[in-house]
Length: 502
Length: 96
Image 1 (tube, rainbow over the protein chains, first blue to last red):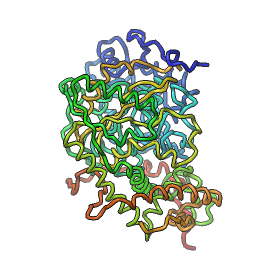
Image 2 (cartoon, helix red, strand yellow; image 1 turned 120 degrees about the horizontal axis):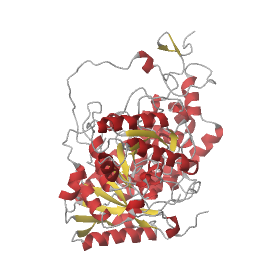
Image 3 (cartoon, rainbow over the protein chains, first blue to last red; image 1 turned 90 degrees about the vertical axis):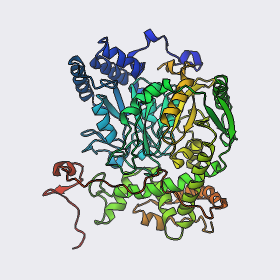
Image 4 (cartoon, chains in turn red, blue; image 1 turned 90 degrees about the horizontal axis):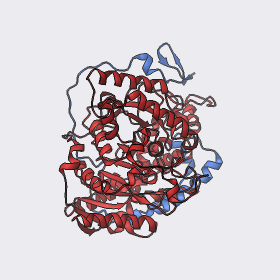
């Protein structure tokens, strides 16, 4: 039994003794290029680590060892021939089980898609393959990415590596837990209302939700299409920048993906030095915020101030309406998107249906879990005749006001600094009431409604040893700036060099 | 928001093509009643003259050249079909 004291939970952190599975992309890429390491050795180490900790963590829905080792061998052959594809060539990266990889399972952690095998690659998958990454495993999540704890998975919950009796956050909890536990070198998740940033905060890793439209959603299982965005989890801001450069860019297969120049995000970390003007939204430090989290974020604010940054209090007056706006818009879109699961062309088909039309209602009843059903019902209701104007149309108008709040604040500041989550990782099974769970998203959902980029970076630990994350919210399309601001904090602190003692 | 947050769960479940058990109906009606009660506060916001936002990206018309390309092979398209026959998805008879 691991003691609950903070110090006992930390594994050794000296760079020379850091195990392969805990090292950064930047560090491992240098070792691969210097021929001190092969991708097969690295991938085998990650596989061994995964097998050792999975019984306690359950971050993966499935993995394919032989396939990963074959990709690693191909990477080593490229590098030996002087044809390395770049920094990610040979690096094991695992994807949330909502992102398509040809020939691999794609379940969305749902019974509905339990036996689904993807016939094509998501655009981010194609891009990672072109960059030489070793695609490793399918990561657990809340069913159809609906949830904040990964407890809504049809295949069982994921444990937080810092305390496996606690949740890793969600919906991308497998992505954050796998990375924190050393079961991958980087991971991808998706973020509709905080599903990258909140699990990153709860597991002590970096999580980036890019501007809506920066990354193609082609091949991402849709939850709420106007809010969904794919993004990286990484040990450091630099690693997140490396992965972002590989997966960003316009895609003709996603008409909402934006035609914009993709800069070298990694290079921007050092060319952009500030000082910056940072806004502190007063509404994000109100009642309900855990005092230890408040104290850690206050220290991060003090750090930036000490570096010559101007700190300004700002107001986002419609913050109190974000949650309601989100749960109208997101469930409305979900009820429409999930209409495709009808038991006819793919997915679960009920054998209990009494006729052809009854297949729809019975297959959906058997294939979806309770949270997905709740959101389909709520979304159908707010779109139904007589209620559309009162709920859906009104929420879309409030969404305009929420976005304007942020854009007004950005006239005066470069970025906003807030807590990521009001609470640290909670016990599995602790939050049984859906509304209590929804309230956990209060600091993250405004960003999705406004389509902004935001990053969660580790900023400390509670006295009981649970990670704390700070959120930086950036201006649209200014990921370079956002990453540079986060990097400045990170390199002055050693949170990313602390690992859970599993 | 004059609409009452009374959710007719049978009607909505039918619209959503979702067969619910009586336990689910009772539970969801109560839980979603709480959520709808919370959502009622949107009625307090003055939205007069405010345009709705459908999505946050400033993209409107998207044009591209229409170039024919191969699609999914039949075997790939049918790979996940629950039932298939003669290169088609098979379903029970709809009309006798």
